Image 1 (spheres, rainbow, N blue to C red):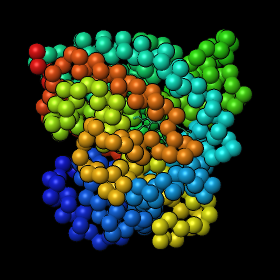
Image 2 (tube, helix red, strand yellow):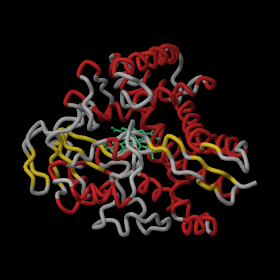
Image 3 (cartoon, rainbow, N blue to C red):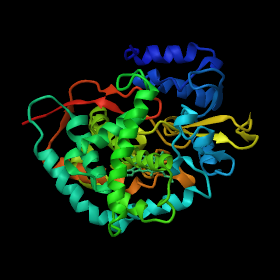
Image 4 (tube, rainbow, N blue to C red):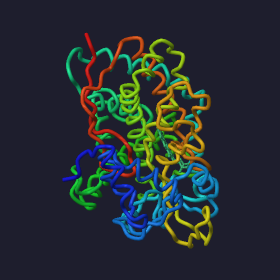
Length: 417
Ligand code: HEM
């Protein structure tokens, strides 16, 4: 069993009573119980580059301030994403199960693979997708129950993002929930509910690989079309990927497009309930959706961190980092850095520079799907505002047990008749 929600005061007292060196902000339980905030507040003030000597992830550095994170993001020559060195999350993958994808590759391999899928996310292509997204969003929203409690995560966030993903891959429509399942499995922490062991996880992901391999074989024999599988099957940079790289890129695209957007769609409802004055402001002026969307993505921070490995001895702030050290960039903390973002804990839908946040990362790996994510949120909120006066959160959400994916398992809501 994991911990229960602590009161803000309890979490704060605990965060400030621990010796600094004993702080382990990577503990998934802190995120599950939403009690990670005071730990990061303390680190930003007292040890912005902090070393955790011992944890379930081994030793690691935590970088918690906005500008220090930016300095790492933009220095890919020194800070590697390579899966062979551990990859991009605080948890090292088991060496025999490593699956390189372009998010966990350095130059020169990263660029060409990224370029292969990038055309999917250009403004012109997204303009074409917008009508489909809107049509599907309308259908989902029109079928929601009234005057009855239901789970927003399952009925709206998961459904909408899964449909989008199925479109991007041109995946068999009736089987699209497989994508949701694989995405959840790929990010599941063994023992926390979905899978018992890494081996069990591996078996399921291999089923995912086999399913996609079948689709791949079909696409490679067809003329090129604008879906992610076909794009990879017909590109020089990705046509001859080995099995591990193939599965790695698939999982990247499935998770990239799924959990993150899903949790932003849920986070938007939750944030507006926490800040009812902002909900009113949005209802009174739907044009604010333009700045509301990036504010949701900052406030939610759907991925708490990305990790790098130092390729050489170097310095971050005043701390000496050794070659081979694991460095975790906590976006969740950088997005609450009061030196860069005014009133960072407040959800303010008309901020002057709403895109001033770290949620999409920066540098060569900056999220390739960010425009699509923003577009989905924009469309769904345009349609929500046309239909419903208020979506009321009736119970606190159940959160994901992870210090990587920051999101919601369930969000019980009600919409008045
Ligand atoms: C709100 C939604 C999203 C968030 C918060 C998010 C966040 C991120 C972050 C933090 C990174 C790594 C950046 C870095 O290391 O500097 C990333 C990379 C990536 N994202 Fe997203 N993402 C979102 C939506 C999407 C969508 C919709 C897709 C595609 C369908 C996508 C596909 C990818 C891919 C393929 C990469 C790897 C890029 C590279 O290595 O060059 N993401 N995303």
